[in-house]
Every structure is written in C-alpha cells, then in structure tokens.
Image 1 (cartoon, rainbow, N blue to C red):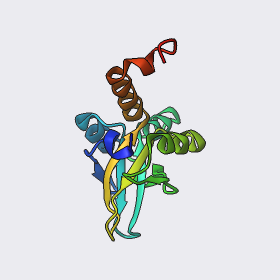
Image 2: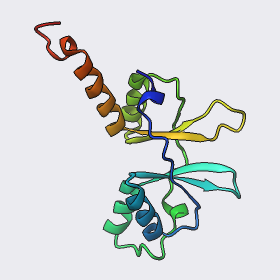
Image 3: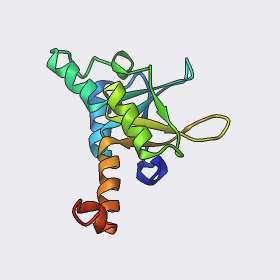
Length: 140
C-alpha cells in the first residue's frame, strides 16, 4: 500500500498570522489534526498540529494572541504519494510526529495531501479485512 492510498486530500492551509484559536476552529470544522502553514514571505511550508496548540495552551499562552507562525514546525519531513506506508510510518516513528505533508510530483511540489498515523492504521486494517489469512497468524 502507498501513501496515496491512505492520505487525506483535504488539506487545510492557513497563513502564519492566523491565531491559534482561528487555527483550532478551522481544524475542528474540517475535522483534521493538522494544518499546513504557508508563509508566502518565505515561500515555506510548515505544519501546525493539534499538539502544538495543546502545548501552547498548557503553557498558559493566550490562543487569541499567539500566532500559527510562532508554533509552526518548519523542519518538516515531507512524503511523496509513491512512498510505501511502511516508509511513512518509519519516518513518523523516527521523527516522533503523527502527520506528514504529502507533496506532489510537479515542479512547484505543492501539497496534495496529508497522511496521519490514523490514516495508515485505517488502511492497514481495511487491507487485513480483505485478506483474512493475513489477520490470522495460525492460518497464515
């Protein structure tokens, strides 16, 4: 199975000036755990996750004053749609994160999706349901 088979193509993109409250509302409305932060001044892509927002709140910071820019991870590991799910899971495990931005193959390499640990697990579970022998170690 490949990343393209598991990824969500719903990519929430926000700007660095969005407050954490605005980001949280958008993420909640779209039912996603991460937003791609596009900084047009630096032409860079970053990611803001629910964990970033939670850490800020836990530190007592004001979500109406804190910006996405201040909490965005910019040293992002990107995935390609042709990666295997094992490659994506390995990258997540090594990096200690739960989301990968998936970049397209075009010259601009724009985000085409996001894959999460939940997406990967769901894909693996669906695959095992289709091939019961794999789910039963005695039968396999």
